[in-house]
Length: 247
Ligand SMILES: *[C@@H]1O[C@H](CO)[C@@H](O)[C@H](O)[C@H]1NC(C)=O
Ligand SMILES: *[C@@H]1O[C@H](CO)[C@@H](O)[C@H](O)[C@H]1NC(C)=O
Image: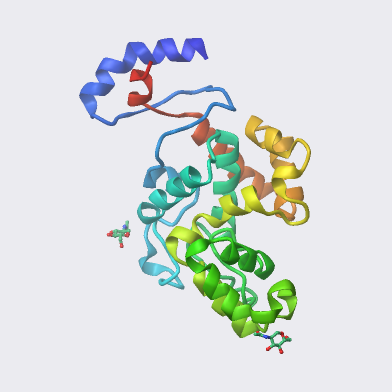
């Protein structure tokens, strides 16, 4: 840590001359260090996000990396996702589930599962929970499901899709992974699972595996793991020159 900072201070003047918002990439930053910097489109493309949606199979759903970056940052800020480990886990999940932000709803096998969607591709019971928990659309969701509010499985497919529609806007769709991590869980609430948050914040593989299997409720496959590792490396290395000017 100390060595890294010393190195950065010596290289600062050159970077400031280069550009007012030049970013310094510090190798070997602490895993649990909060990262305040913004994502760039290059950051996201490097992690597998779509750079250009013009050839996308579902152009209405696709968001290029330039479009996506501010919504990812906003979701992290709004839900208090501050550590590299947590950001890496949530962002890599979204990228994996949405094909690099090409998809906003489930399509496969065709015609796709009614009610499943947003960038972390949540199943309907969670889509409904999310809509009911989101003040701007909660009343509409309540009206749509009527008496089935306590039995999401009974909600007819067309109604599931109508509820999903309420949370597909960029602001809500890019925030659902953060909402899920903070307020829900595949079984128990993620935040209530002993050691889960601490493990994810520490950026350990065990912490991430626990998040994927216990919180998200899926399997910790190799390609998911590779995506998380890449995202973790990115967030661990993220600094702005302006961060260093703060006392
Ligand atoms: C990304 O989307 C924005 C907004 O639609 C557009 O202006 C920009 O050209 C797109 N970038 C690429 C590389 O396609
Ligand atoms: C509630 O579920 C039942 C069973 O699927 C269905 O017949 C009924 O239309 C649903 N009510 C609403 C308001 O969706």
